[in-house]
Image (spheres, rainbow, N blue to C red):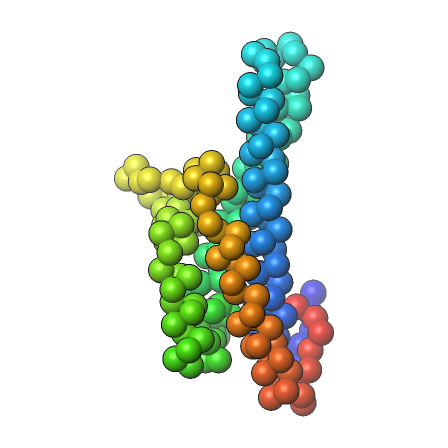
Length: 176
C-alpha cells in the first residue's frame, strides 16, 4: 500500500506505469494472438488432445492481456471526474493542456483504434450494457497502429516526469 506525502499519488509515476503497462500488454497480447493462430492452424483440437490444454491456457492469457490493455488505454485517456479527487490521465493533467502538447495528445486520443478500445471498455468491460455493441477484437487491435501510438506518448510522458520532478521537489514520492 502506498503512503504518500499529502496522501496523494505521484501522477508522474502513475501515468508512466500505466503507459508502460499498456505497451507491455499490447506486445504480449499480440504475441499470444500469433501463437493461438499458429495453434489453430496446426491441428483440430478436441478436449482429449494434449494441445487443447495449451489452447485453453493461451486463450486465458489472451483474454487477460486484452482486458488489461483495454483498461489501461481507458486510464491513459480518462475524462471522468472523480468525486474524491483528480483523475490521473493525459486528458486531465494540467501539464498536457498546453497547446502543443494538447494537440499531440488529442491527435492520439482521436485515433479510431483508441476510440474503439475506449468504447469497448465503456460498453463491454467496465460496464456491461444490455444493447449489443461492437467490441474491438484482438486481431483488430494487433493489426492496428496502437503500438506506435503508445510509443508516441513516451516523449510527452518523459517531459511531464521531468517537469513534475522539477516543480514538486518538496513533494517527492517514490511509491504508487
